[in-house]
Amino acid sequence: MYVSPEDVVAAGKRIAAYTHRTPILESHLLNSWFGGHRIHFKIECHQRVGAFKARGAIHALLALKERGVKPEHVVAFSSGNHAQAVAWAGRELGIPTTIYLPEFVSSVKKQATRSYGAKVVETKTRMQAEEMVADAVKTGATLIPPYDSDDVIAGQGTAALEAFEDADVAFDAAFAPIGGGGLVSGTWLAAQAITPATQVFGAEPLNANDAARSLRDGKIFRWPDSPDTIADGARTLAVSERTFHFIKKLGGIFEVTEEAMMYWTQWLTHLLKVNVEPTSAMGMAAAQQWIANLPAGTSKKNILVIISGGNLAPSSYKKIWDKDFLIATPAPVIPALR
Image (cartoon, rainbow, N blue to C red; front, side, top):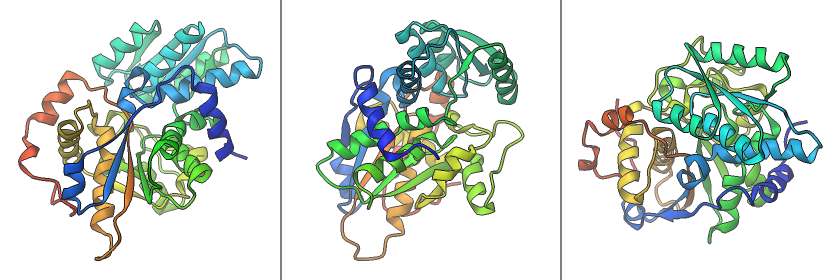
């Protein structure tokens, strides 16, 4: 039996004293370009550590504490924001942390992880990081997984839960990026708790589409090594059995090109005036595809897009902004991007 919608509601109460209740923003200009559909953005780049991952990490540790368990030492592996989240959560609760990071992780995220007091161990590959964490667990450390945990998923789901509770509308569709699947699983659960009629969709890099491949194959697809995508939060090797259980319940997964991610990173940064990382931009790229496929004459929709984080390395800035995408106004069509 996996985590339930009720668990997400309970998680929201458990973490409220530690996390920000992040805002929901709209761009009226963007809405007008999209024919009057209202697109609402949950701004998790304003969350602790600059990403939704803070929710799952602190919730996992608080849930252990509530069960009477206080780990002596916590470990984690990550290619993205989970590293900072676990380091921060450990600091908040006074628990030493060691984080294993593949060497391709940005220097900004490595520095931030260290700044929260964690010991950082760099590895050549993500697979090596996973193996070293497994060895640490054998010697007594407690692992906080990036997504394969009921407590982590429940915590991640509180981002959408807040949006469903705070918005002045009922959402027709919600979009969340997929790396390991924790956020989109939690989003589906939150919808079941508050607004079951809302369709939940995932967004995934075309270059790192293990979740979409898994859905098509009916079994989990695993990359032999980290896939090559600018969305560093989606460089996971595979979803887990736990997250795949929920991914199969989604309305679908939209696969997003690298260029589409950079396009929407630029436009959302410009329109919303917040830091947007490419992983976050996938949700809007997916929403664009969904709106483009709506039948003619469809009533105006209310759409939720989760801006999952805003931690960008200087090298990523250069790549993203090397081409000026702002000369092409957004529209509800599937863009001819490669």
